[in-house]
Image (cartoon, rainbow, N blue to C red; front, side, top):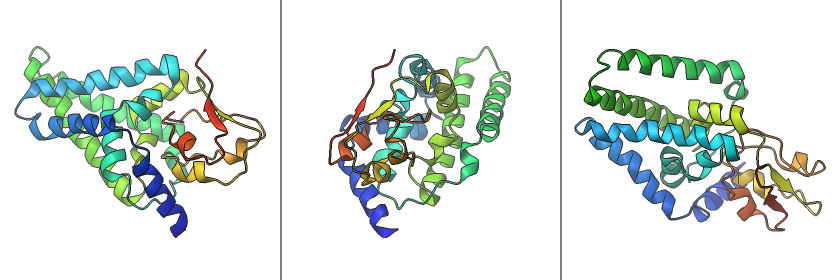
Length: 224
């Protein structure tokens, strides 16, 4: 589907706000300097707490708008060709399994020297390095935000508040599917126009679909 791929790349690059480039530099700084300056590693738990905490108010809004690694994927790799995401990535067993493995590995490493903050910083840097490498590999092989289907922080945020602030689909939707071509999570949007809103808990609330809609029939319902 060359046309869909091209449309996605153009829409992705066109609608990225400038601040996402700044957020992406946070990840770059942590990855490049965290081994030498362990204090930078503490940006990792801060980002994790923000993502999960945001779930109580707007679901995965932080993932789509303020996540440093998500911003890196959007800005640096957003124009890469997009391939369909495999169904197994959405399976709860897979997602919670990834969370268990990564959190378990992190806790075991932290326990190695629990009283040393430098050790903690290096562990956080190492976890960032491993997960970002996985995110980049998935971006190159599938699509830019593929990792967001497996990200433990996103899994928790979706579980906490995935139903908050759902995307509203106006009755005058023409079914052109440009919104779906722009969606970084490859969610089906047009299929839900009769219901009037998108029920998917993994919606990132990034507004790329809203900006891509030529009929301007998409908008957000504020979180309760």
